Length: 113
Image (cartoon, rainbow, N blue to C red):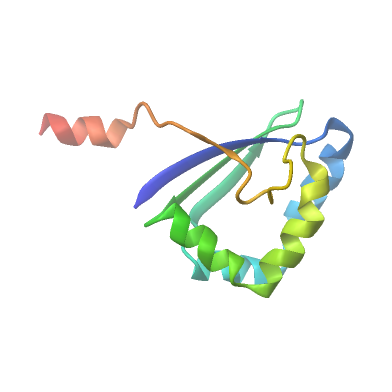
């Protein structure tokens, strides 16, 4: 599994509603994410709107393509786009900045053995 971490910026005036929406994600969206390879997926939100996402997947490109083929993802991304700063024409699930992994404890411990 590949570990993926990404960042987006939520508009400060939309933080409360963003959290509410993610407290009750649509069941068909949850199933679609799981079915298309978004595993161990978490979102972390800082008080100023910095959003960090983390997931594990065999292939980010395939996971994104799988979601793009679902009807629910189009609806969800259209509703979520208004919450973010500087997405341009991109949807939130493709317009994020991916972060480089520079340390993973288990990988380094495994290299010791």
